[in-house]
Image 1 (cartoon, helix red, strand yellow):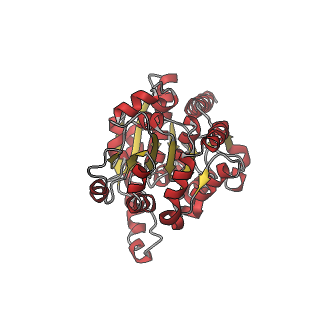
Image 2 (tube, helix red, strand yellow):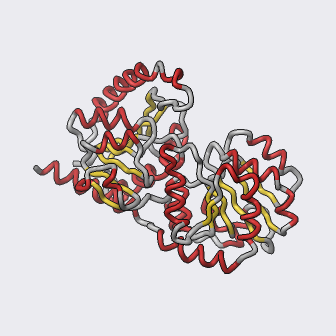
Image 3 (spheres, one colour):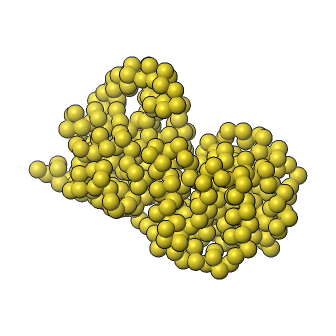
Length: 368
């Protein structure tokens, strides 16, 4: 019997790309498996999942607004509506398992599946578990996590440490530095700094770059700058006419980005951290300070404490970030230390481990 699997979640690339990696690994192990994604209408997954070749159903769901409590008045009604939508999807698709990867749609889909005694699996990418996943974990079949110490959030007997799935085009990349530099139309004789702040962008990183944009050329550096969608035109204007700066709101070819990089500036979302461990690049993390439970700082410090990365606080970015970039770019000994240490945290087959375990557990349940 071929499995029918729903994968729920999204909102950011940090949830979507691991979900697609897991789906691809399942299809590789069991080509006849049918996979349906469920995401939040209007969110990034509604575009990215079909691009990866999978069908997705959208539901009306939003998250709790921490900054404005009054905006949460309609949340219970939205949640109830989403449960009816989920009920219809599950009754129609008849999944043999449901996987949650985080994001708004995870909770109603897994909660309904658990009520119907359908095996549910959670992938928690961060070192500090989200509240929805903690609630769902009590009745989950298995919980896949990136780090040890997650017994603080989940039943110990359900935890499986796998790391985070990374896109195959990054894990298996054979792109040379020269080809990557040519791809961006930059100079092979300059050190290349990469700034990535996520799909929406990182305001503190972007503003620090704008404030000191001329210092890159002054220090013989070039920049590949992913600004994110917010204020992208403003940042493009700031870089106009500067041949040492390549700028765009989003970069699909991340294997090119990493191959070109000598130094990386990044937020510290779980997937960014995981990818940077795999590609082993000297990195300066600027954690987003308003992430739930400040988990980005926890993610970054996990590496910083092992001399595997540097950190600049978000509040200090405008004053300190570009100085730190220039110092690191000129210190090849420190670059080497960071490269050697960060690669010790690389896990390249998490998607395969997760897919294999899920298929094994479903098969065992079906034979009982």
